[in-house]
Image (tube, rainbow, N blue to C red):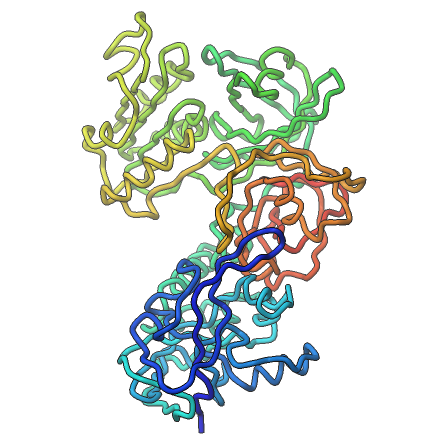
Length: 587
C-alpha cells in the first residue's frame, strides 16, 4: 500500500554559495499534524524561483523513500531527513518506473494528478552537498515527480495514497524523463507523450521541438527539446585563411570586407542571417582580435561579405578601417547561427537599426535572388544620411521584389538629408512608428540592432499580438545571462580573472573580445567565464539541462562529468567542460 510518510514545507531563504547569494526554498522540513493543500502549494510552503519551480503544474513535489535508501547506499550517507531532496511529500511506493503521467491519486481530502518529472537544477546539489546531484538524479532514473492539485484538501503523514484513475498512454515518469534528457528520442514515443493531456506545458513544448527536429530530416544535431535551435553544423571547425579581395566604404563609419578563401576551394553557402568569427592579427604584434560579424551579402559558395562599424573605442573597427588592406589575410570560421530566414509564404518584416542591418540585409539579398513573391517590409532606423549604410543597395534589391515596402527613419537628420527621398520620417523606429504602417501581424519579424531597440520592439510586438514564435532577434554582443536564483549584482564589463594569470590553454571569448589563460583553479569553462564576468547561461551545472550550450568556434574540450546527452555539432556545454588546447567560444 502506498502511503504518505511526511509532509514537508519551507519558505525561500538566502544561502551563501561560491561567493554568491542564492535564493532558494529547497530546504524543506516535516510538519506535524495536517496541512491544507492549495492549488499552487501547501500552506507554509513557497518557491524561490517560479520560473523553474511552482505554478499549477508543479504545485507539489513528490519523492520516494526507496530512492532515499538508494542514495544513502550509493553516496555512503546516513544523515538524510524527510525533505532532504526538496520534496513536499515523502512517500512509500509510487516509484518513478510505475507512476505514469496523468495518473490521479487521492490523498487525505485532496485529489492530485501527475504532470511531469522534476526538472533538476544546481540547487539540489547545494542542498545535498553533492555538486553532480542534478546529473545523478537523471542518469540513475530517480528524478521524482510533480502533482497538480485537482481538489484542495487537508493531508497528513500516515494518509493512504489511492490510485483513482490511470493516465492515458501509460507512460511512466521514468520514460518521460529519459525521453527528454537521455540520448535517442523516438518519434513514436514523442507522439505518445504529446497525446497525454496532463503533461505540463513546458514538457509539451520540449517534445514538440524534438518532434519537429525529428520530422525535419535535416542535418541539425543536438537536443532541440533542451536548447534553442543552433542551425546546421558548421561546415568546418576552427579557422580558414581568407584574403581581403575588396574593401568598400558603405557610410561614414561602416566598411564592408569581401573575403575569399586563399586555397580557392568553395565554401559552404551560409544561410541568410548567419555570422562568422574573424581572427584579426594587427601587424604591430598586438594580441589577435576575435570578433563575430554577421554576413551582409548574398549567400555564396565563393566569398563572404562582412560589414564592420568603426566605434570610438572599438579596436577591431579601427584596425579594419585604418590598417587592413586589400590582399591581407584574415582567419575566418565557418558560418553559424540560428537567426536565419524561414522558408514559406508568410510576410517578412526586416527590422533593424544602425549596423544591425547586416544580417537582415543578407535575408533581403536572398529574397531578391529568388524573386520572392512574399510580402516584404524593410524597416530601418539610423541617425542621419551620413550613418546610413547600404541605402542604394537596399533600394535596388527592393525594386526587384514584387511586393516590397520600405520605411526609413532618421532620428537626427542633417540639413542636406531629403525627406521622402533619403528617409521617410524623422524620429526613432519604435512601436508607435510600426503601428502607423499597417504591418502584417501574421508575418515573421526579424529584428537586429542595439539591445534596447530589440528588447523594446520584442516586448512591443508581443503586446501588439504578434505570436512569440514569429519574433526573431539577433544581438552582436554577449547574450543576456541566465543565472537562476542568484541575487542581482552590478554588471561589470568582461575582464581578466583576479589573481595570478594561468599558464594553460588560451580561452578566447569571441563576443566579449577577451583572451584568458586557463588555470588549475577552474573546474569548467563556465567557472572561468564567471570569474571574468563574461555573461553566461546555466541551470544544472552538470551537463543535463543544456542551458549553457554555446558555440565552440575552434578547439576541442573534454568533459567531467560526461553530458547526459551530447550538444549539437560545433557546440559545447561549458558547465562541465575543460579546454584541450586553445579554444574559441561564442560568448
